[in-house]
Image (cartoon, rainbow over all chains, first blue to last red):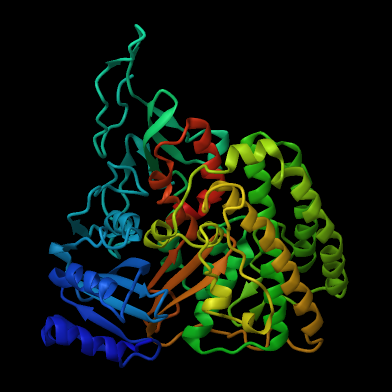
Length: 161
Length: 393
């Protein structure tokens, strides 16, 4: 069982200091901010490395930080053998939000990434089926963005009632 | 038949081929749902069939999507989110409320008194029984066994009566609040619950005689939809569907929340008794046996429950959590329900994400249904026990 601080040490030893940044000043739980391009390699390392073995992705959520004009993806990882948890975050600029998929590493990510795309417009490069999942295919806009304006008509039907 | 889809992954059908008996055969695409009695709501399965054999299955969801997460952000009060979480998994609303309340209490560092804790545990275990009864009943119904469904609903009604007395509602309760409960339980709650526990035990045996060990039922469910352990973990499957594959994993024991560490109960797993480990029958029987474990927990909780304690003691007047975020997960009847809540120090949540167990469990469906018959699809969907309100949120 390892703490986030220990895991941060391991990751920065493997991928370099600038690749990941520890945020431990928050009250509730610390997290590590990871560079978007590296998320796939880091995820694979975290899953396969002995002593880490993060075999389960509990949750993957998109977040819109409107004030900073940024979009984020949060990964909550858990190891069923080592019993430790880790929170990873990726922060991207709003107008160019894309990052590699982790679908091939944890299958849980398949539908969660589609949901993040559907709700926030974050693109996951290399995803095998990058479609909307909850909204119809021809829906306009990304509902969970803070500045979302619902479209007036959908196929001739009034949306706002 | 032509491919009716507008977008999405291209389904390539194999060219017509000769069977050697003067007959030609070709794959075809059919839509199962969204209006189909066995899809437990509005789920559409796009099946590619070779005769009766499923060669590809694509679930299409979202018919019940109402963007609960957006609604939560629009509420100017964290407490107002609770009725919305009720409506996610509408057959296990108590468990949804419990998960949300615990997440918020951890974020705000609130401690509730023992009476509240015990009432919450009893309520959520009763809800687990009610939810499993519905799952078992409708699973039998899908396969063609109508009678057990009615037997299950008789028992479920008794649980709902207890809830109705306590909260006034039978389905969507808004009973578990952040920091406490809506109100204390009525005076005869303990005796009602004890009576239910006493009367329900023999009914489980009856259910086993009626359905679980029924030859036709076993033939329809054993060796069907086998979900191997590795696949289940990689897909993030949780709850009875995961335990059916033989994985000893229950958040009540492995990542305890509330006061589950005070009770003695077993984690039920599938053993492959009727066929292969992880088949539909294993997932089914885990639910049946879990009801007995829930009864054990309720009995212990009734014994230990303190008589004194104000259920409103820790309910905050104004909910304004410190800036920060939390991911908190609890075990609902369907598996791991996680709430990812971000607070920006205001009175409305910045982000509430629900990791719904049914959503994740359903995503494994294509992986386990390829090679099955169309009729088996019905059994597989029933055995995963999804609630579309939670899948689509």
